[in-house]
Length: 116
Image 1 (cartoon, rainbow, N blue to C red):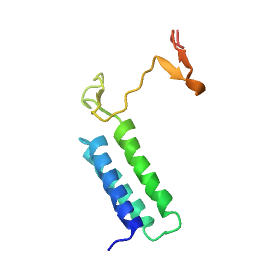
Image 2: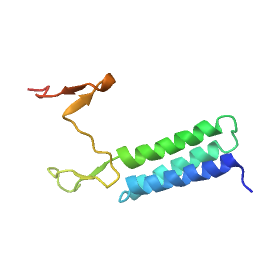
Image 3: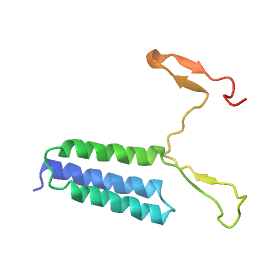
């Protein structure tokens, strides 16, 4: 039977693999590079038992960032004036740029551009 940290580490590793599949769906070079980096870091940390809980928590947080905050853009490389197309998927966290939250629940309304 596997120990608890190894079960959590395997779960975190799978979570990162799923997140890379979502974030880098059509970009195979980036997908493979991200997965290789994840594997390298997990292998590097495999026998370090001191901070394993913290490393596992970091892995789950990285997976969340990959799923909710990474947006990729692409354009036709043959045309210099081509527009960028963003691949925004269902799990992307969409923010509201009209207001900025301050501590205490206060908000600031942005009325004009800073570059006018």
